Image (cartoon, rainbow, N blue to C red; front, side):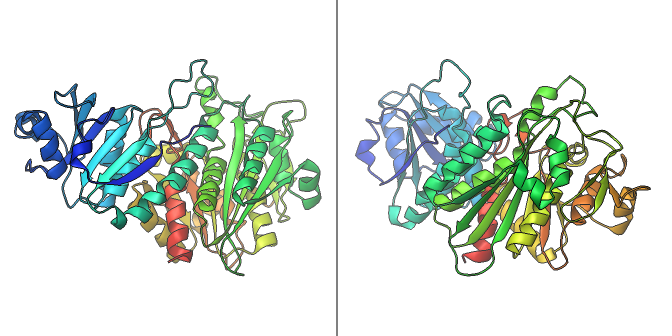
Length: 488
């Protein structure tokens, strides 16, 4: 698994700057004012830093952008990374600047001369999150990311925030590694085995096998995986860091590969369907972060792990299967399989844990990408308070999210002639009808959010905090929401 760079916190020591062997980042506001560490860098560079920040190249830089000055004279460092950043920049802007620093540093040891503690932890977190490279399947692994040293005038002011960076970065990296892994490596069995490793962090982990699922009546979930040689599973992860209250539930779609089943997908681009377990990946990474930081909250994470393959035993379009709830589902399209996985796991979570609230995550529909692109996840909810709490958390973490509607008119598109409900409602409002299908399996009185992360779980270009590929979107926001709701 990929290990994030460790962040060391130290007090400002101007004499130590000269001999740092790696890359040095300095923050400079738009007016070009140099703080004390930057002035020392400028002195060692014989005025080269000042000449740059008073010139046209710095003026043209966007806020939060960087420019590397390679092989600076007077320093042991291989480069000075100049960051254009306002002294009053908020956390999101500081983190984005940190991401730019991390990209420029390219895994080399990094010294961030933040000067003032304000925003410095976000700079370091951004740099740590961007310092990711998935190399598990490469013969040449390359070097591990170099350590990040954060130098500030008053370390005690940010000590707690810096101490939490490792838990956040490890959770995000765990999600990215799971989502990036090819499906012949991350089978349902291997996925479950990796989650069992969370026991070492104090998470209670239980793996429900096919016989258990059959006994529970999870026939819609089992119907998705019955054409695969990989056994379907549900993994239950419990973190009990709070009191005696009922837990909050996180539920993830874990389709380790999605061919579409009998409703076979086109060949072009099918290789990307290794990321169709993105929802389960986010739940897993969030549970790891909560455990690492010893969250004072009770949270249960459940993931449905299946593989959707065409086979003589595979579910056919037109088949009718019964859910754990007892509703019968007419399967119109076997490529609309994620909702069949989630509905059983959601019902099981409510029956067993009676959660205070519930969030499900899934790479569910291509329609959400048409609507929101790769910048925001679709947010559907039956509860304004819970939804607002998540949207506030996502905004504070710089992870794009947008609330979408629900309504009876959309639910009517799912009406079946021969069963209680169809699994698809046609092309119009496809992401909304998918959410309405899941809404059917939410008990009265249970606050619920459905996050359609098809556009943000893995991207073809670099995203807010990550290189191209798996983004880890959602770990930061869910962690923040849980902290705000249960630990503040």
